[in-house]
Amino acid sequence: MRLVLWALALILLAVIGISAQPLSQSQPQSQSQSQLQSQPQLQSQSQPRSIDLDTLVIKLEPLIQQMMLEGKIPSATVALVSREEIIWTGAYGYSNLWARTFSVPSTVYLIGSTFKTMSTFALLQQMEAGKFKLDDRVNDCLEEFKIQGEDLAHPVTFRHLLTHTSGLPADFGPHQVWGETVPLSLKDYLCKSCKLKNPPLTKVEYSNTAYTLVAYLVEKFSGVPYKKYIQEHIFDPLEMNDTAFVPRPDMEERLAIPYIVDSKTGSQVPTVRLKANVWPAGIVYGTVTNQANWLIANLNGGVYKGHRLISEKTFKQVMSRQYDQFVGRISEGWLNETTGYGLTWWISQRKGDTLFAHSGSVPGYTAFLVGNLDKKTGFAILTNGNKAHRYLFDLAVKALDLIEDCRK
Image 1 (cartoon, rainbow, N blue to C red):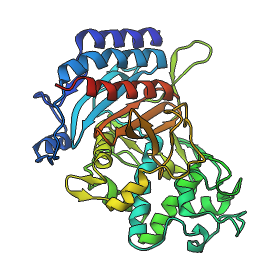
Image 2 (cartoon, rainbow, N blue to C red; image 1 turned 45 degrees about the vertical axis):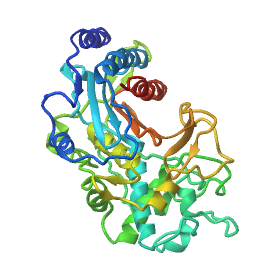
Image 3 (spheres, rainbow, N blue to C red; image 1 turned 120 degrees about the horizontal axis):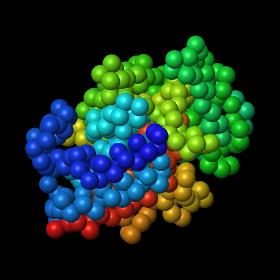
Image 4 (cartoon, helix red, strand yellow; image 1 turned 180 degrees about the horizontal axis):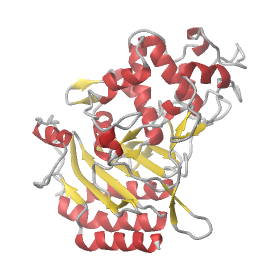
Protein backbone atom coordinates (compact mmCIF):
# COMPACT_ATOMS: atom_id res chain seq x y z
CA MET A 1 0.00 0.00 0.00
CA ARG A 2 2.79 2.42 0.89
CA LEU A 3 4.47 1.78 -2.44
CA VAL A 4 1.20 2.52 -4.26
CA LEU A 5 0.65 5.75 -2.29
CA TRP A 6 4.21 6.80 -3.01
CA ALA A 7 3.83 6.24 -6.75
CA LEU A 8 0.52 8.11 -6.78
CA ALA A 9 2.16 11.00 -5.00
CA LEU A 10 4.81 11.27 -7.67
CA ILE A 11 2.17 11.21 -10.39
CA LEU A 12 0.22 13.93 -8.58
CA LEU A 13 3.31 16.09 -8.36
CA ALA A 14 4.01 15.61 -12.04
CA VAL A 15 0.48 16.71 -12.93
CA ILE A 16 0.07 19.77 -10.73
CA GLY A 17 3.71 20.79 -10.44
CA ILE A 18 3.39 22.23 -6.95
CA SER A 19 6.93 21.45 -5.94
CA ALA A 20 8.99 23.41 -8.44
CA GLN A 21 10.20 26.70 -6.99
CA PRO A 22 12.23 28.91 -9.33
CA LEU A 23 13.67 31.66 -7.19
CA SER A 24 12.92 34.24 -9.86
CA GLN A 25 9.20 34.02 -9.05
CA SER A 26 7.45 35.66 -6.11
CA GLN A 27 7.13 32.58 -3.95
CA PRO A 28 7.70 32.41 -0.17
CA GLN A 29 11.41 32.11 0.56
CA SER A 30 13.53 31.32 3.55
CA GLN A 31 15.55 34.16 5.05
CA SER A 32 18.75 32.93 3.47
CA GLN A 33 17.19 32.83 0.00
CA SER A 34 15.85 36.37 0.31
CA GLN A 35 19.19 37.65 1.51
CA LEU A 36 20.94 35.90 -1.32
CA GLN A 37 18.77 37.60 -3.91
CA SER A 38 19.18 41.05 -2.37
CA GLN A 39 22.97 40.98 -2.52
CA PRO A 40 24.73 42.56 -5.53
CA GLN A 41 26.23 39.83 -7.67
CA LEU A 42 29.84 39.87 -8.85
CA GLN A 43 30.23 40.47 -12.57
CA SER A 44 32.76 38.60 -14.65
CA GLN A 45 34.49 40.00 -17.71
CA SER A 46 32.59 37.56 -19.91
CA GLN A 47 28.97 37.25 -18.87
CA PRO A 48 27.32 33.93 -19.83
CA ARG A 49 24.02 33.89 -21.62
CA SER A 50 20.96 33.89 -19.37
CA ILE A 51 19.18 30.63 -18.62
CA ASP A 52 15.63 29.92 -19.76
CA LEU A 53 14.36 28.52 -16.46
CA ASP A 54 10.89 27.68 -17.74
CA THR A 55 12.30 25.43 -20.45
CA LEU A 56 14.89 24.01 -18.08
CA VAL A 57 12.28 23.00 -15.50
CA ILE A 58 9.98 21.49 -18.12
CA LYS A 59 12.83 19.26 -19.25
CA LEU A 60 14.28 18.52 -15.81
CA GLU A 61 11.18 17.58 -13.82
CA PRO A 62 10.38 14.38 -15.76
CA LEU A 63 13.99 13.28 -15.21
CA ILE A 64 13.65 13.86 -11.47
CA GLN A 65 10.43 11.87 -11.32
CA GLN A 66 11.97 9.05 -13.37
CA MET A 67 14.98 8.98 -11.02
CA MET A 68 12.71 8.69 -7.97
CA LEU A 69 10.69 5.86 -9.44
CA GLU A 70 13.70 3.88 -10.65
CA GLY A 71 15.72 4.54 -7.50
CA LYS A 72 12.74 3.91 -5.19
CA ILE A 73 13.25 7.29 -3.57
CA PRO A 74 10.33 8.58 -1.44
CA SER A 75 11.30 12.26 -1.64
CA ALA A 76 13.95 14.58 -3.03
CA THR A 77 14.88 18.24 -2.85
CA VAL A 78 16.94 19.75 -5.67
CA ALA A 79 18.79 23.04 -6.15
CA LEU A 80 20.49 24.47 -9.22
CA VAL A 81 23.25 27.04 -8.93
CA SER A 82 24.75 29.44 -11.44
CA ARG A 83 27.73 31.55 -10.42
CA GLU A 84 26.74 33.27 -7.13
CA GLU A 85 23.04 32.42 -7.18
CA ILE A 86 20.61 29.64 -6.42
CA ILE A 87 18.57 29.88 -9.61
CA TRP A 88 15.96 27.22 -8.86
CA THR A 89 14.81 24.77 -6.20
CA GLY A 90 12.36 21.89 -6.41
CA ALA A 91 10.91 19.38 -3.95
CA TYR A 92 9.17 16.12 -4.79
CA GLY A 93 7.47 13.21 -3.07
CA TYR A 94 6.75 12.46 0.57
CA SER A 95 9.27 13.21 3.31
CA ASN A 96 7.02 11.10 5.56
CA LEU A 97 5.06 8.39 3.79
CA TRP A 98 2.84 7.54 6.75
CA ALA A 99 1.78 11.14 7.37
CA ARG A 100 1.80 11.96 3.63
CA THR A 101 3.95 15.01 4.25
CA PHE A 102 5.09 16.63 1.04
CA SER A 103 8.77 17.50 0.79
CA VAL A 104 9.62 21.21 0.43
CA PRO A 105 12.99 22.92 -0.19
CA SER A 106 13.35 23.52 3.57
CA THR A 107 12.90 19.82 4.39
CA VAL A 108 15.84 18.58 6.46
CA TYR A 109 17.83 15.50 5.43
CA LEU A 110 21.07 13.92 6.58
CA ILE A 111 23.78 15.27 4.24
CA GLY A 112 26.25 12.47 4.96
CA SER A 113 29.77 12.55 3.59
CA THR A 114 29.23 15.71 1.56
CA PHE A 115 30.18 17.24 4.92
CA LYS A 116 33.71 15.84 4.58
CA THR A 117 34.41 18.58 2.03
CA MET A 118 33.46 21.22 4.62
CA SER A 119 35.62 19.64 7.32
CA THR A 120 38.50 19.69 4.84
CA PHE A 121 38.25 23.47 4.51
CA ALA A 122 38.35 23.77 8.31
CA LEU A 123 41.58 21.76 8.45
CA LEU A 124 43.10 23.75 5.59
CA GLN A 125 42.35 26.97 7.45
CA GLN A 126 44.62 25.64 10.17
CA MET A 127 47.27 24.84 7.57
CA GLU A 128 47.11 28.44 6.41
CA ALA A 129 47.53 29.52 10.04
CA GLY A 130 50.92 27.77 9.95
CA LYS A 131 50.03 24.71 12.02
CA PHE A 132 51.22 22.13 9.46
CA LYS A 133 52.01 21.48 5.79
CA LEU A 134 50.18 18.99 3.60
CA ASP A 135 53.10 16.59 3.39
CA ASP A 136 54.00 16.74 7.08
CA ARG A 137 53.82 13.54 9.13
CA VAL A 138 50.55 13.51 11.07
CA ASN A 139 51.98 11.59 14.04
CA ASP A 140 54.37 14.48 14.69
CA CYS A 141 51.32 16.56 15.60
CA LEU A 142 49.71 13.95 17.87
CA GLU A 143 50.44 13.70 21.58
CA GLU A 144 47.50 11.93 23.32
CA PHE A 145 47.66 8.99 20.90
CA LYS A 146 49.41 7.99 17.68
CA ILE A 147 48.41 6.41 14.39
CA GLN A 148 49.27 2.80 15.14
CA GLY A 149 51.14 0.50 12.80
CA GLU A 150 52.99 3.24 10.93
CA ASP A 151 56.33 2.52 9.25
CA LEU A 152 58.61 5.53 9.76
CA ALA A 153 59.88 5.05 6.21
CA HIS A 154 56.32 5.55 4.95
CA PRO A 155 54.64 8.05 7.27
CA VAL A 156 51.00 9.06 7.06
CA THR A 157 50.70 12.68 5.92
CA PHE A 158 47.88 15.20 5.96
CA ARG A 159 47.58 14.81 2.19
CA HIS A 160 46.98 11.09 2.70
CA LEU A 161 44.16 11.79 5.16
CA LEU A 162 42.38 14.02 2.63
CA THR A 163 42.68 11.58 -0.28
CA HIS A 164 41.66 8.29 1.38
CA THR A 165 45.18 6.93 0.85
CA SER A 166 46.27 6.89 4.51
CA GLY A 167 45.60 3.20 5.08
CA LEU A 168 43.18 3.96 7.93
CA PRO A 169 39.97 1.87 7.95
CA ALA A 170 36.48 2.78 6.76
CA ASP A 171 34.72 2.05 10.07
CA PHE A 172 31.42 3.55 11.24
CA GLY A 173 30.46 2.43 14.77
CA PRO A 174 26.68 2.91 14.61
CA HIS A 175 24.48 3.88 17.57
CA GLN A 176 20.73 4.23 17.29
CA VAL A 177 19.55 7.78 17.92
CA TRP A 178 17.07 6.46 20.50
CA GLY A 179 19.31 3.63 21.68
CA GLU A 180 21.09 3.17 24.99
CA THR A 181 24.65 3.63 23.68
CA VAL A 182 26.35 6.83 22.56
CA PRO A 183 29.35 7.57 20.35
CA LEU A 184 32.76 7.67 21.96
CA SER A 185 34.58 10.97 22.40
CA LEU A 186 36.96 11.84 19.57
CA LYS A 187 39.98 11.04 21.73
CA ASP A 188 38.64 7.73 23.04
CA TYR A 189 37.55 6.57 19.61
CA LEU A 190 40.86 7.45 17.96
CA CYS A 191 42.93 5.92 20.76
CA LYS A 192 41.10 2.67 20.07
CA SER A 193 40.65 2.72 16.28
CA CYS A 194 43.41 4.80 14.71
CA LYS A 195 45.24 1.75 13.34
CA LEU A 196 46.54 1.31 9.82
CA LYS A 197 45.17 -1.51 7.68
CA ASN A 198 47.71 -0.84 4.94
CA PRO A 199 50.73 1.40 4.43
CA PRO A 200 49.81 4.80 2.97
CA LEU A 201 49.48 5.06 -0.81
CA THR A 202 48.94 1.31 -1.13
CA LYS A 203 45.46 1.95 -2.52
CA VAL A 204 42.45 4.20 -2.16
CA GLU A 205 40.36 2.93 0.74
CA TYR A 206 37.50 5.16 1.81
CA SER A 207 38.13 6.08 5.44
CA ASN A 208 35.68 7.61 7.89
CA THR A 209 38.33 7.16 10.57
CA ALA A 210 40.62 9.56 8.68
CA TYR A 211 37.98 12.30 8.78
CA THR A 212 37.33 11.69 12.45
CA LEU A 213 41.03 12.32 12.91
CA VAL A 214 40.65 15.49 10.81
CA ALA A 215 38.06 16.72 13.31
CA TYR A 216 40.37 15.99 16.22
CA LEU A 217 43.20 17.88 14.50
CA VAL A 218 41.01 20.92 13.80
CA GLU A 219 40.10 20.99 17.48
CA LYS A 220 43.71 20.52 18.59
CA PHE A 221 45.20 23.16 16.29
CA SER A 222 42.50 25.78 16.81
CA GLY A 223 41.94 25.27 20.53
CA VAL A 224 38.20 25.47 19.82
CA PRO A 225 35.72 22.56 20.18
CA TYR A 226 35.22 21.08 16.72
CA LYS A 227 31.47 21.66 16.44
CA LYS A 228 31.88 25.27 17.56
CA TYR A 229 34.71 25.80 15.08
CA ILE A 230 32.67 24.46 12.18
CA GLN A 231 29.70 26.60 13.18
CA GLU A 232 31.75 29.79 13.36
CA HIS A 233 34.10 29.23 10.43
CA ILE A 234 31.98 27.29 7.91
CA PHE A 235 28.24 27.33 8.62
CA ASP A 236 27.85 30.93 9.80
CA PRO A 237 29.90 32.64 7.05
CA LEU A 238 28.00 30.69 4.39
CA GLU A 239 24.57 31.38 5.91
CA MET A 240 24.04 27.65 6.36
CA ASN A 241 21.47 28.38 9.03
CA ASP A 242 19.73 25.01 8.70
CA THR A 243 22.80 22.77 8.88
CA ALA A 244 23.69 21.18 12.22
CA PHE A 245 25.30 18.18 13.88
CA VAL A 246 22.26 17.93 16.15
CA PRO A 247 19.02 19.18 14.56
CA ARG A 248 17.28 21.99 16.43
CA PRO A 249 13.62 21.36 17.35
CA ASP A 250 12.44 23.38 14.33
CA MET A 251 14.70 21.26 12.12
CA GLU A 252 13.32 18.05 13.65
CA GLU A 253 9.87 19.29 12.70
CA ARG A 254 10.98 19.36 9.05
CA LEU A 255 13.05 16.17 9.12
CA ALA A 256 12.57 13.59 6.37
CA ILE A 257 12.10 10.04 7.63
CA PRO A 258 14.81 7.63 6.38
CA TYR A 259 13.49 4.73 4.30
CA ILE A 260 14.86 1.49 2.95
CA VAL A 261 13.27 -1.01 0.59
CA ASP A 262 11.91 -4.19 2.17
CA SER A 263 13.64 -7.06 0.37
CA LYS A 264 10.57 -9.30 0.58
CA THR A 265 7.73 -6.92 -0.32
CA GLY A 266 9.60 -4.25 -2.30
CA SER A 267 7.81 -1.55 -0.32
CA GLN A 268 9.37 1.41 1.45
CA VAL A 269 9.78 0.93 5.21
CA PRO A 270 11.23 3.38 7.73
CA THR A 271 14.62 2.56 9.19
CA VAL A 272 16.36 3.65 12.38
CA ARG A 273 18.17 6.98 12.56
CA LEU A 274 21.81 6.60 13.50
CA LYS A 275 24.61 8.31 15.31
CA ALA A 276 28.16 7.01 14.85
CA ASN A 277 31.58 6.94 16.43
CA VAL A 278 32.81 8.57 13.21
CA TRP A 279 30.19 11.33 13.38
CA PRO A 280 32.55 14.03 12.01
CA ALA A 281 32.69 12.02 8.78
CA GLY A 282 29.07 12.83 7.95
CA ILE A 283 26.43 12.64 10.68
CA VAL A 284 25.23 16.14 9.85
CA TYR A 285 21.76 17.41 8.91
CA GLY A 286 20.87 20.15 6.46
CA THR A 287 18.70 21.51 3.66
CA VAL A 288 19.28 21.62 -0.07
CA THR A 289 19.48 25.42 -0.09
CA ASN A 290 22.27 25.27 2.49
CA GLN A 291 24.03 22.68 0.34
CA ALA A 292 23.67 25.07 -2.58
CA ASN A 293 25.39 27.79 -0.56
CA TRP A 294 28.33 25.42 -0.10
CA LEU A 295 28.38 24.84 -3.86
CA ILE A 296 28.44 28.60 -4.47
CA ALA A 297 31.52 28.99 -2.27
CA ASN A 298 33.30 26.23 -4.18
CA LEU A 299 32.26 27.50 -7.60
CA ASN A 300 33.76 30.88 -6.74
CA GLY A 301 37.22 30.00 -5.52
CA GLY A 302 36.34 29.46 -1.86
CA VAL A 303 34.49 32.78 -1.57
CA TYR A 304 30.87 33.34 -0.49
CA LYS A 305 29.46 36.88 -0.63
CA GLY A 306 32.89 38.37 -0.26
CA HIS A 307 33.97 36.07 2.59
CA ARG A 308 37.00 34.00 1.67
CA LEU A 309 37.28 30.63 3.42
CA ILE A 310 40.71 29.61 2.13
CA SER A 311 43.31 31.26 -0.08
CA GLU A 312 43.24 31.02 -3.85
CA LYS A 313 46.45 28.97 -3.78
CA THR A 314 44.99 26.46 -1.31
CA PHE A 315 41.73 26.30 -3.24
CA LYS A 316 43.62 25.30 -6.39
CA GLN A 317 45.15 22.43 -4.44
CA VAL A 318 41.69 21.32 -3.30
CA MET A 319 40.47 21.18 -6.88
CA SER A 320 43.54 19.41 -8.30
CA ARG A 321 43.75 15.65 -8.64
CA GLN A 322 46.42 14.57 -6.15
CA TYR A 323 47.57 11.12 -7.27
CA ASP A 324 47.51 10.15 -10.93
CA GLN A 325 48.09 6.48 -10.06
CA PHE A 326 44.63 6.37 -8.48
CA VAL A 327 42.20 7.32 -11.23
CA GLY A 328 38.92 5.83 -12.35
CA ARG A 329 35.30 5.80 -11.32
CA ILE A 330 34.59 6.49 -7.65
CA SER A 331 31.87 5.26 -5.30
CA GLU A 332 28.99 3.74 -7.26
CA GLY A 333 30.45 4.72 -10.62
CA TRP A 334 31.13 8.47 -10.70
CA LEU A 335 32.12 9.83 -13.30
CA ASN A 336 34.67 8.52 -15.79
CA GLU A 337 38.28 7.35 -16.13
CA THR A 338 39.66 10.82 -15.36
CA THR A 339 38.13 10.86 -11.87
CA GLY A 340 40.39 10.99 -8.84
CA TYR A 341 40.61 12.63 -5.46
CA GLY A 342 41.52 16.25 -5.09
CA LEU A 343 41.58 17.20 -1.43
CA THR A 344 38.40 15.30 -0.52
CA TRP A 345 36.39 16.45 -3.56
CA TRP A 346 36.19 14.02 -6.49
CA ILE A 347 37.79 15.75 -9.48
CA SER A 348 36.92 14.83 -13.07
CA GLN A 349 37.29 16.15 -16.60
CA ARG A 350 34.27 16.16 -18.88
CA LYS A 351 33.82 17.93 -22.22
CA GLY A 352 36.89 20.02 -21.48
CA ASP A 353 35.56 21.21 -18.10
CA THR A 354 36.64 20.41 -14.55
CA LEU A 355 33.92 18.95 -12.33
CA PHE A 356 34.08 18.49 -8.55
CA ALA A 357 31.64 16.20 -6.74
CA HIS A 358 30.91 14.20 -3.60
CA SER A 359 28.12 11.95 -2.37
CA GLY A 360 26.79 11.21 1.09
CA SER A 361 24.99 8.13 2.32
CA VAL A 362 23.82 6.52 5.55
CA PRO A 363 20.91 4.07 5.84
CA GLY A 364 17.80 5.80 4.51
CA TYR A 365 19.47 8.88 3.04
CA THR A 366 21.49 9.62 -0.11
CA ALA A 367 22.89 13.05 -1.02
CA PHE A 368 24.98 14.40 -3.88
CA LEU A 369 26.75 17.61 -4.89
CA VAL A 370 28.45 18.44 -8.19
CA GLY A 371 29.84 21.65 -9.64
CA ASN A 372 31.35 22.65 -12.97
CA LEU A 373 34.30 24.93 -12.19
CA ASP A 374 34.51 26.28 -15.74
CA LYS A 375 30.83 26.93 -16.36
CA LYS A 376 30.27 27.90 -12.68
CA THR A 377 27.11 25.83 -12.46
CA GLY A 378 26.11 23.34 -9.80
CA PHE A 379 23.56 20.74 -8.78
CA ALA A 380 22.60 19.69 -5.25
CA ILE A 381 20.18 16.95 -4.22
CA LEU A 382 19.08 15.47 -0.89
CA THR A 383 16.86 12.38 -0.62
CA ASN A 384 15.47 9.91 1.87
CA GLY A 385 16.21 7.06 -0.51
CA ASN A 386 18.64 4.31 0.40
CA LYS A 387 21.87 3.70 -1.55
CA ALA A 388 20.53 5.65 -4.53
CA HIS A 389 23.90 6.95 -5.71
CA ARG A 390 23.84 5.91 -9.35
CA TYR A 391 20.41 7.42 -9.91
CA LEU A 392 21.53 10.73 -8.43
CA PHE A 393 24.75 10.65 -10.46
CA ASP A 394 22.87 10.17 -13.72
CA LEU A 395 20.43 12.99 -12.93
CA ALA A 396 23.24 15.35 -11.93
CA VAL A 397 25.03 15.03 -15.27
CA LYS A 398 21.79 15.55 -17.16
CA ALA A 399 20.94 18.60 -15.05
CA LEU A 400 24.29 20.27 -15.71
CA ASP A 401 23.90 19.60 -19.44
CA LEU A 402 20.36 21.01 -19.41
CA ILE A 403 21.55 24.25 -17.84
CA GLU A 404 23.86 24.79 -20.82
CA ASP A 405 21.26 23.64 -23.35
CA CYS A 406 18.74 26.16 -21.96
CA ARG A 407 20.90 29.25 -22.24
CA LYS A 408 19.24 32.00 -24.28
